Amino acid sequence: MIPTTLVYLLLVFSAFGLFVCFVSAGIFLAQRTRQKYLFPIGLWRQWRQQLDKTADEPWDSLLGRAGYPFHFGKAEWLAVQCILGVVMFLLLIIWQISHPDHSLSLIWLCLLPSLAFFAPYWFLRWWADYREEMLSTDIARFINRYVTLLENQVPPYVAMVKAARPTKKLKHCLPSLSEWNKDRYEALEKLKQILGTDDGMILVSNMRTIEQLPSDLVSVTLNRLEWVVDQRRRFRQRKKIKSLGLAYSLIVYPAFYIGLIVAMFPWYKLLTEILDKYLV
Image 1 (cartoon, one colour):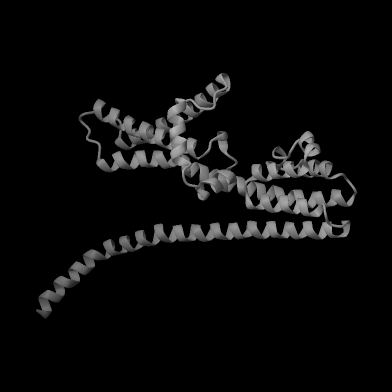
Image 2 (cartoon, helix red, strand yellow; image 1 turned 120 degrees about the vertical axis):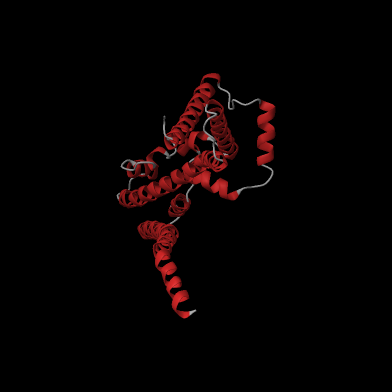
């Protein structure tokens, strides 16, 4: 007989495999058919209208920091969450029907679909934090080279491309030369939207500002920007360390005290018996 824990793990991995298959098939079919959505158009419009009735700044900020993976918006991610939760629930029901001798606990029946439902959201938050940290490092590296190139009288666009060349993510976000020649302010605005992070917004604002500054103030402004980006990255790291310490306290300390109480219970029981025998 297969252990129950192993069956649960197989169900979880199967659900994630189905999720990956659904996303890959959806992207492939959307590219082949050149249709934006796989759902019926009327149903999808109603779904989007219900979600777009009120502005949701946390979701917009999260998607902006994550860079809109798979070109999915809030409606797409919530649809994926619902599909994955339903798929996990159906897998559990099918397993229960195929194994009538094993009763499935109600806790697992609620817990596993809930975990499957929130898994895409947790992945999105992890990817947003990872991308923000990577872009922050890229921006700090970019500024140092950008200042040097501008001081050597290199044109702004050429300096921007050369400065972003050793970066990991930033070099893929730069506007093309045609977009830059057409309207550099619109190109910078598009760059700000693609970056989607606070450090990216600060970078674009300073790139607009230095075009109106004399040459002797360009270096000072960009060096100050580099200092601000470094301080923001250190603040995020300190915040992450504090959150890890809080999570450690919430997980370890209660378990330690519970174990201590359980370990002392026989001594406490013996002590009460002695007191009852000699003091009563």
